[in-house]
Amino acid sequence: METLESELTCPICLELFEDPLLLPCAHSLCFNCAHRILVSHCTTNESVESISAFQCPTCRYVITLSQRGLDGLKRNVTLQNIIDRFQKASVSGPNSPSETRRERPIDSNHSGGGSSMTSIERVICQFCDQDPARDAVKTCVTCEVSYCEECLKATHPNKKPFTGHRLIEPIPDSHIRGLMCLEHEDEKVNMYCVTDDQLICALCKLVGRHRDHQVAALGERYDKLKQNLENNLTNLIKRNTELETLLAKLIQICHHIEVNASRQEAKLMEESEQLIEIIQQRRQIIGTKIKEGKVVRLRKLAQQISNCKQCIERSTSLISQAEQSLKENDHARFLQTAKNITERVCMATASSQVLIPEINLNDTFDTFALDFSREKKLLECLDYLTAPNPPVIREELCTASYDTITVHWTSDDEFSVVSYELQYTIFTGQANVVSK
Image 1: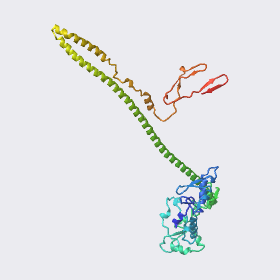
Image 2: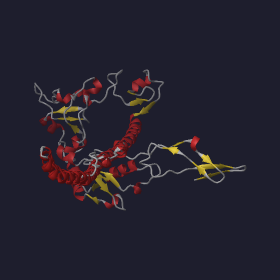
Image 3: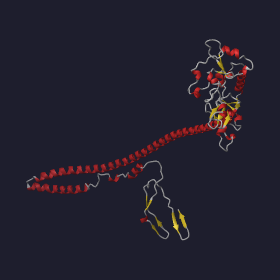
Image 4: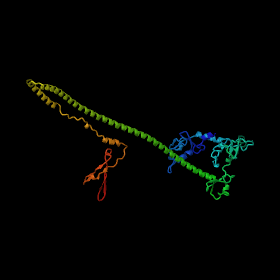
């Protein structure tokens, strides 16, 4: 039955559901508790009707409200019927679940302990005549006595007035009688000292050191402190909701950073590949021009080499004939052949000067020199777009006449700046005119 009771408990007020709402996430919530959540989301000048969504306190699912607000959500009629039956069954007898509803064993922290006494102390029946007494199964808060099963049936029949007694899980006798005064051990605390901010008994007020202090009733102090705690809890819930919203935004921003960074990296790779492709294309074009120039020069040189070889062959043959003629000692025979050979040698000498022109081809490729200084500077300065530095006006070079002004400047960003805007002021006797 305790498990059933926990299923019927609102996660906000920790009480049985009252007018439960059925949320779209299948969880339930008291109508008043849902209204409190909406109030915690409101700012100073904001109404509850302006809140269009809130989070389920169980699963954090975002509940979107219609124009009707909370009235637009369905009522959990089935759950309400179960709670009604549960409450009717809770008053049927001393062993019913309602007698132990929300009656938790008192923590022993007030006496210096750090854990529940029920987990370390054995509670025996205080009504048994047997020796030893049986273990207690229930403690009656009204009677301030712990009972075993048989004594409970004998002393608390299922009839009035015993049906109104509160039965809880067995706890030690020192916890049944409530909180006792620290100065008067036999007196229960029944009022609150506002001056010293502590619980006191009637004797403390009458004859003790608190007699001149301001005191308040426990109920009054309880209501005030409970209201204060509820207000602080509402503020904490509101702040927690704001932090959760902020957390969601931060997580979303992190996701956007990841996506945008990946997109930018991909764009960088794409642009870099395009630059590399352009460089490769230009390299291929320029390389083709170099190869074509080499072919043209080699073709011309090959023709000259062929002409030289032919001249050399004819000259070699003529030289052999001339040398052979020079060896002739017979004057008549020499004169007969020398004239013809002499003419041929002279003609060969003259023709070699005509057929073989001066070599004027250059073996260097200086005409194909490339200047990459501008491109290298651009690539070395390749970076994200930033505002360029202003140019430096060289006043010593600037001139001005009646209707003409010449301005000279130098800039470190000459390759990235398309144009500059010049603003100047004309000083007159009456007013200054600013122009662009």
